[in-house]
Image: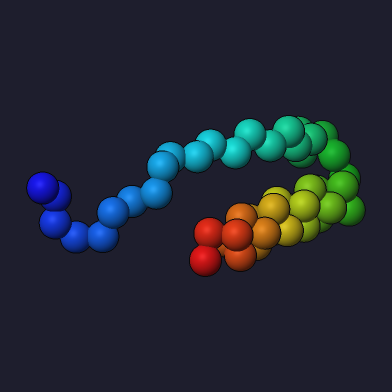
Amino acid sequence: MPLGRPFPEKRYEDSELEDTAGQGLEAVRSIRDEIRARVCALVDEIL
């Protein structure tokens, strides 16, 4: 019998994001903000 806290099942998130190559600063910032929002939502869901 394993000791310690049991881990939840593995879960994979697949996110389609635009490639930042060759894009302007505003487009890259928009993609960055989208990544940040997705990560925050995932953390909120886990905790």
